Image (cartoon, rainbow, N blue to C red; front, side, top):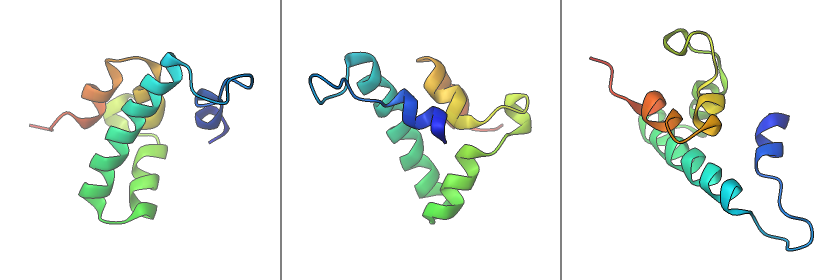
Length: 80
């Protein structure tokens, strides 16, 4: 989880997020909302986005989401 915290580190001089950090936070928040809606439990939602997933080639959904703007659609895409 240290990697996630580092991704949202604030600009110390300003005390606020940079544009890049804000964008990452928005992507994470939207995936978190989907996970909460799906699992109805914060603990279950947390486990689902912080655990490696076979459809993501063993990667954690949270890492995929935070990497770039194409991560969110990959993680929340409906499975056929």
